[in-house]
Length: 391
Ligand SMILES: NC(=O)c1ccc[n+]([C@@H]2O[C@H](COP(=O)([O-])OP(=O)(O)OC[C@H]3O[C@@H](n4cnc5c(N)ncnc54)[C@H](OP(=O)(O)O)[C@@H]3O)[C@@H](O)[C@H]2O)c1
Image (tube, helix red, strand yellow):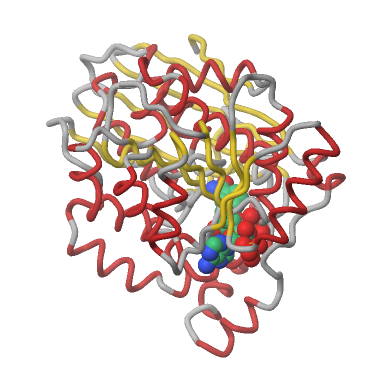
């Protein structure tokens, strides 16, 4: 189905750190796409527009919309084929926009990494979005596009009639922004509430569309792995949840699918130091006064400099096995948190807007469920490594 709208993509949150990088990316990217930048503050949006106009000679539209004003969000969503949003923390500000996109009949993409937000929108909006032929795609940034597509590439090359195992091993260098810091501290502080909600909600594991058994690789805990010449530390991010949701939704993943997700660390003391650090942050985020102190460490809107981003990189190696066949995949790129996240979100939005005839899943869907093949092609064309070979 084709829809006619004033803009192909409306970028919501364009005045923020990641939103600004997305706006630059959309302006510099070759193509015929028409896009608007959106947010709650006219003056800040005009500054972004003027910067883009000076740097790239492109003049995006401006749309004012505030997360506290649902009518403004619906009016904004009605002007685009797709809304891509970088307004977070999503658990705090995200839901009204999802609702607005459903009302306006507009596809949606975000870069959340907050499981409680994703659970909530699956629970509340999956059926309605599916009935209305819309795609709501969360986790279109470093959380969780590389991991979702890497596991998909393995599954695509393995026999789909045998139990399948995929392990993803992440290495990266980079730092983070104020917005990411605030989202992480909020997620830590709401963690217990999230676990309670999750226990009550079988739907949080994603819409059941198959009888496939999907779970975690059984080897738990930290272990040395000679394949990567380092220690594997299980990573309890949203990424394994997204990979497993894709495995439930797509037929490639065998009658039984298991996934393991790890950070690769060279030396054991680094593992212990990291665990102590994260545990400390988690504990401090549980109490109002200490949580407020943590939030003051980095302000929203701040982020790593161009020099810091230029030296950042990521590489995720995947080891897949099914029916005696083994494959290895690699997904890699430059600064994971910001430059590549801006690229991934922008390409997801362009894919939803321009590759509609190749997409055949609706509802609250993962990046791989929604658009695996055209998205892989797009990201390769834009310089990211996504490759798979026999091990
Ligand atoms: N998944 C990933 O890999 C990844 C990577 C990077 C970032 N993120 C996530 O993306 C989000 C943004 O990060 P960031 O560093 O770009 O944050 P940021 O610089 O603080 O930007 C936040 C944006 O949200 C806007 N905003 C806040 N409250 C609003 C409201 N009530 N109505 C409308 N707009 C509102 C801000 O607008 P004003 O300018 O008007 O304040 C700003 O444009 C965070 O949740 C972060 O965790 C995820």
